Amino acid sequence: MVKLKGKKVLLRALEPEDLDFLYLLENDTDLWEISGTQYPYSRHVLKQYLDNAHRDIYEVKQLRLAICDLKGQRMGLIDLFDFNPKHERVGLGLVILDQEKRNKGFGAEAVDLVTGYAFSTLNVRQVFAHVLEDNMPSINLFEKLGFIKTGIKKDWIRWQGTYKDQYLYQKFNPICT
Image 1 (spheres, one colour):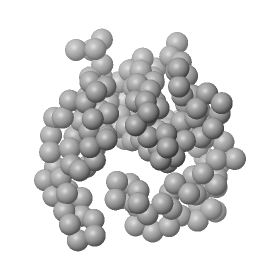
Image 2: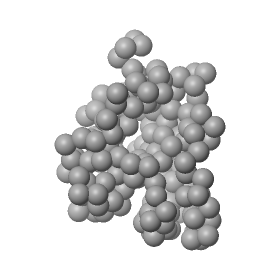
Image 3: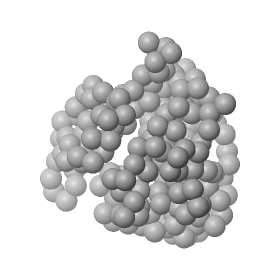
Image 4: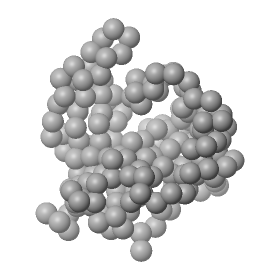
């Protein structure tokens, strides 16, 4: 059985009390470049999302988990998205909202835990991530964890009048290769 608890972090399902945290995260305009968000989310809409967050990944094709330290303090979110059981793949997204927790191994452990979950529980062959060309912390993180840059989408993201390349990173299940 895959544990969603490591030496530094615990990954858990979203709870109704995560509403304020989700509201801060989704409305942080500094994150809109990577998330593709173009307008703020209301608490009402986010509450509806939380009310449905229990739905099965096979039905909704995504899973969002809170990243907490071992004391239960939320610091970020990790998402599995575009889950495709037929092609045995799933996307991964990560955000550590707490600036003081970045680059301290929390994100790496969260990615490692959720990748293990995807390989062993969801039985995917690969996990992929999209990373902007100038996001060096994420590039370093994924490469450190064995993800391979397999593609470049040229001028893929337009943000504030500038185009940026987006890299495709993939990690393959060692059991399937």
